[in-house]
Amino acid sequence: MLRPPEPLRVRTVHDVVETAHRPLLVMAENGSLYYLKYARHQLYELKCEWLCHYLLRLWGIPTPDIAVLTVPPEIFPTFPPAAQSTTRYLQQPAFGSKLIPGAIDSSDFIQQGTLSELATLSNPDDLLWIALFDAWVANDDRRASHHNLIIAPAPIAGRNSLQCWAIDHAFTFTSQPFQYLDHTETYFSFNTNVSQAAVARSVLNQWKEKRPLLWASELKEGYYLRIRHCRHQFAYVCSLLPAPFHLSEVEQTHLFYFLFCQRRLELLWDDFFASLPQS
Image (tube, rainbow, N blue to C red; front, side, top):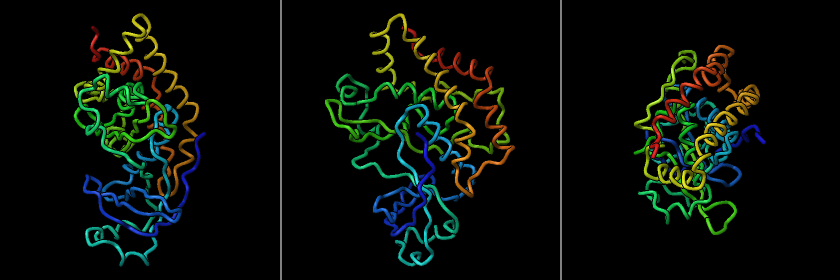
């Protein structure tokens, strides 16, 4: 069940993570660690983070818990030197993604997509669903060479005790304001999509071996089923975005047609399926 993000105050700032958005690693008042992203460039980038969190959850894809983080001005002087310049962006609530204990970058763990590597994952099929999800939301930042995925111990340990999580969704929806989205365009580049990564190809080969006559129809049906589920929940998802990240009526309208235009969905599936190895 989708829930509104928990509002939390930040107690301490530990470090700056030197990636494109320079998020802060912080401890919140509940004692948990979060990656805090602030509106350094464009506010819509953080709107993308909120939206994709909920849409991924509706697709059944693991993604870290989130929170609305507020940084009290009185702790600004305690920031480490590298984080002092971020205080100008922290006058309003920020996006928080909860740190997953024991997480490592997927590319440090899954390199060739071997059977032994895949055998340790509890959710290898999610790699295909993530590839489709990224095509659907026009993710510019998860690629075959740059997964933007983490691997961490699964919440329920078993024989396959690791789980793949999707992270970082600021550069989705073509990385432009929602009112500029064109629902007649797919914005899909099969050369860069994570479906072209060795690990995703290995998962696809396993599907083909287990379901030689049904794999394509199962993938297609799962694609449309997940999108229909999101369409039914779209208004509710929009209502969960906290201030100041609410979508205007214009933004919601453009985003709705972009995500659920039937013709675009058909073209997107055709392009995606054509990009997959057929033998």
